Amino acid sequence: MAKTSSVQKNKNRTALVKRYAKQRARLKALAKDRSLPPEEQFAARLKLAQLPRNSSPTRIRNRCELSGRPRGFYRKFKLSRIALRQLASTGHIPGMTKSSW
Image (tube, rainbow, N blue to C red; front, side, top):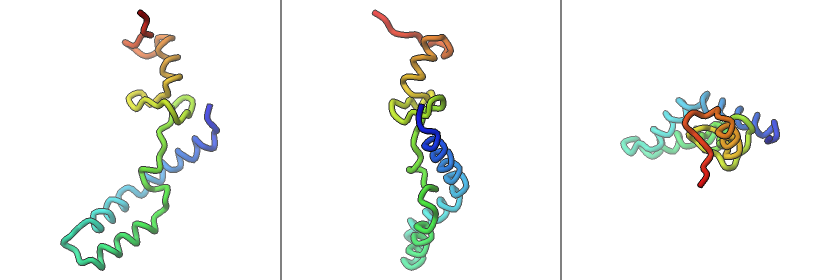
């Protein structure tokens, strides 16, 4: 089990990303728009830099929904490899069985 503070930090980041998504997208579009004068593009970049760092989507860490483990993460299931194997072995994931040959 991961530290609860790490899991909570990641949840706070996710909430910040949601809160600032529209504003961030608008400012990024202004900063990339070549039809605008360079001063306006630069002003948009400055405003973008003033937003909280944790409101950037790249700061979110993929973590297991059950254990909070950050490594060995399967995006399709939102689970770590260990939790996925346990659930598959107990039959909680339909159609998935443990391989043996």
